[in-house]
Amino acid sequence: MGNGFQFIDIVFFAMIAAFLVLRLRSVLGRRNDTKTGHRDPFATGERERGKDENVIPLPDVGRRPEAPTPDMEPGETGSAIGRGVQQIRKVDPSFDPKEFLIGARAAFEMILGAFAAADKATLKDLLSAEVYGNFVRAIDEREKAGHRLEDTLVGIKSAEVVEAFLDGRVAHVTVKFVSEQIAVTRDSEGQIVDGNPNTVTEVTDFWTFARDSRSRDPNWDLVATRSLD
Image (cartoon, rainbow, N blue to C red; front, top):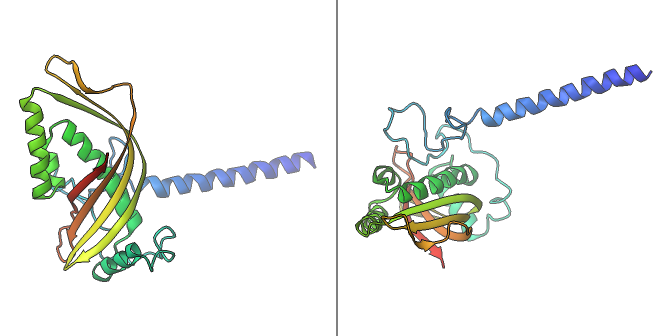
């Protein structure tokens, strides 16, 4: 009898293990960065290498809209955010706040890294012309002073949609990011002129992304940024 129960336990745990493997495959299988194992939310299918890689896509246009998500709907359908999301979905039924946030979080990390590294090419693909100009001026001033920025993103504590609206045919979505960062500015000799390499600072940013809903281009551009002091 004892052996029988032991056999049943083995079968039961084997079924649980198989279920967990299938669940992991269903999640990890959506990631397409084969080098790092992290999902590239900017890829929208097969692209030429180096072309249109840094984009935040909407879900496929042909896909049926998913059921309302609990954090955005239906509890917030009467709120300004809920109404804004519904406006965007009227012109693009595939828009999903949760899927959008996945791309926005990755864009946040990529833009911070590109700004610290003075990678203007990457920034140009992700920013509107106005924001790109602001970033470039800051980079040029930093380089003119002989300074180097070291900005380490320790982690993103939270990211949430705080505003969504349709302006004509252009969709706007603002995301509040709360992150932990270590930012240090050094001079040409490596001496610290600002920041502390041993201090983790909590930073709150509000970034607004925009996209022409009638465009075939799936890219979302960063069109505005502001931070809480």
